[in-house]
Image (cartoon, rainbow, N blue to C red; front, side, top):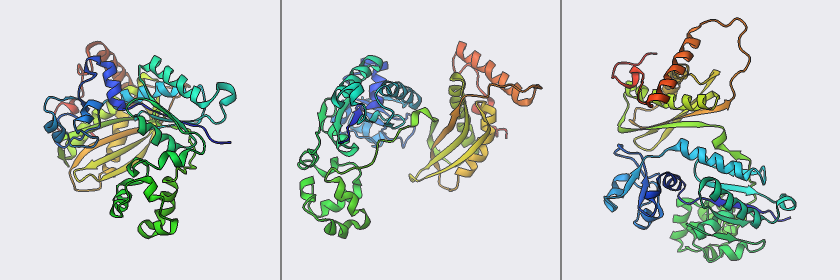
Length: 394
């Protein structure tokens, strides 16, 4: 039986979410990027900004030169992840084989075995399009094909709006007249090498045999050979990252390698993560720190949180050694990301002989701070570490 793969793609996902919150921004050039960081890059942009030459990954300073009046909003990753959760809930009605990123607006579904229950794959895709519009006011591009590669190329063909169906056996004819840069997984290096041979279109590259591709690409030749022919046996894995992690980010206005500034930035990140955990009655059992340096390289480290916690102070105590473990270079740091993993419900059974320990007193204090912030705002009460330049407590 031929596989039936649906690809749903909400074009410019972060922009779509933000303009839903602020409808007055629709139709205007809009960029999602960290503000206040001299080396900030564009995270996402509207179609209007794209037409003005702005691209993802472009330095924000260059984007401003292209349009000095462009509207810039800071990214809100937690908001994008919440919207992705809502979208995933809609898709779970039709199949358990769902693959998505954390907050990128891309969803793959394998509905090969769902036909008897829900009808043809095209009908399922149309139903999901209507459900996304009703639930989240988002209008996805969708495609149906026999594998993920062809389905993804098909949505690229109709961006920013539309649908495309590639029937079984039509993969070769569909891909033939397309430029090679539309094929996922080739990468800049492979495209440059093909360009050196004056190969720009899929049908041109297909003229090369597997043996000929081995000359410039060596061990990657079989992968490239299959991709330009629309062959992709990789399954749709049941992976929805947004359900299993919570993250927080901090981009420094000036790159730094000062320990006190790093710890000062770390605590609000932990506060954000723990507040999200507490609001959902969850705890985290592991944390990962990713540091991005001025030269673009990254280092990472992971630590177990035993016992699992949603306590700001307890998590901070664990994450100080984690920061030191991840911090392995002398280059200045530009960006920090903290990811809380292994999220689960807290222990229900209370201790039989519970006493007023330091941890329980901290938990009471944090709950009181939560109530104050709910009434007077997030900035109404803050820890001294985030206000002063004094060395942080250990």
